[in-house]
Length: 116
Length: 111
Image 1: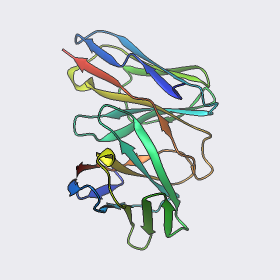
Image 2 (image 1 turned 90 degrees about the vertical axis):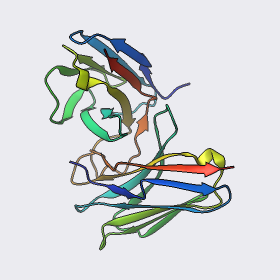
Image 3 (image 1 turned 180 degrees about the horizontal axis):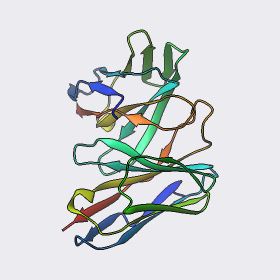
Image 4 (image 1 turned 120 degrees about the vertical axis):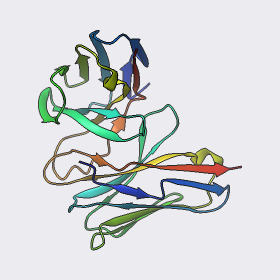
């Protein structure tokens, strides 16, 4: 069983479209994250949710809206896609939030978003 | 902002040799973690070292942490072709779980 699964794996779409990426974890973790990895492999956190509550919101355009219907799911909706949104988006989870953060994060295999 | 800086950016070695990768960071940390990323896959957690620890081992991995120099090293002993991957260091600071990643090191192990 995949611990953190993301769908779709590949997403190719036109500029200006709206798209969603879904993430689910079956580890029973409280905390979930979205990261963006650019073409140079630089990985940057975008959002984090703890038990469905938004706790980290980095400087991300408001075209990006995360939604957590329950603590096992964290989806990412992107409006009005731009060329610069092309990247690999990773979902991750960890057992809990805070407390010095001595918990490893478990990553999905990523969603490769290409904007034409 | 970027916290960790790995060095070298790319490393190519022969199978059986040891691989040493370094990471430097800028601010005080709670812990430092190393992750591996195989091509086309997500990151996999390798090892975590807390700010009050100096050395940690896990199988063929050895991690050191020098908080006075704000640096860490990851040693992979007796490397294998399957160790070919990108390796990232990441740090956490303060009260939250935010991981700040370095740029990564590409390790190639030639059979």
